Image (cartoon, rainbow, N blue to C red; front, side, top):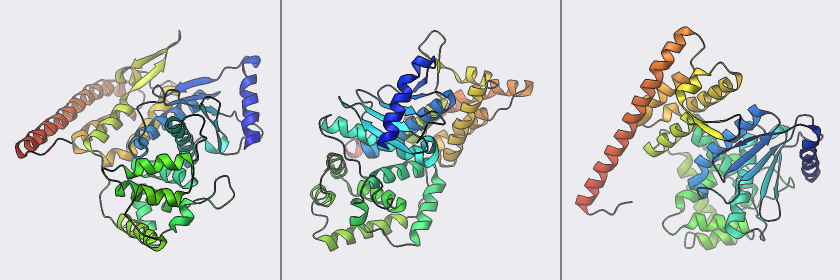
Length: 382
């Protein structure tokens, strides 16, 4: 992988000399910047990175933005050694660069690569550039599993179903799995449930944020776990019983996957927000009506199809306040070309704006009613 890194660096440095210029696709400022010779790949990876940030912001305690983004560089097809998955480099000054090989540009490998880079950048933000971040394999796999199961409720159900048929992973083996291919890959189910369990066990004392910060600085994970979750267990046997009890509790929960109103609103805001580059430079926020009017353009059509697929995974879990808005937006994304579709497009834009406003009004009215009820009972606001 180190050879892949230096080879990729040399190729990217040589591109301007050949008259070629990569396409830059950025998520929100201070998060991710993606460079690729293929515009479609650059925008797809940037969209996935923004989705990952949104889903993992709470469990990883991410700030609104970093002082410098994670720089994602996609190796061109045919790069020698480019079949490798990914490489994360922490450069002088704390800059974090993610090099994506051919096998890490989509699906599960892409999620893991983005999570790996994000955790390295979080480590730099927490401990400074002089402390090399230590990112455990189980943490990468667990956070990627959290991401995958939160955007696709069916995958969470499938994970629960598969986990009920097997024993829990040994906690020591899970937390101390070596990085760098010197051992077996961490168990995906074990890593995902371990992250879920530690998050659930963390209360007002901030046990999980404290443990995560210490893990990213390196050290003995067992000692850090005992210090962060003080009083939860005595020795090694108590620790394993604590973990196994948590495993069985979470895998046997029977809950319908669903989004809170705030989560549903944020998801729809991201999906309905389009930013396009202008010819003279800079970006411009584009309305849904204009995007749908240009849906015959290949790049726009591909983006609408991608967003439609993303929306399709969460529409069943949409909060009731925003269910109508989600269904209208899904229909708008799926519009075909043609005169009849153009007439339908105008009606859908009007309907989307109405459904979106209704959802916002319902959420605000409900929040206000709960605040009044809490005030009458003397309950402190959350």
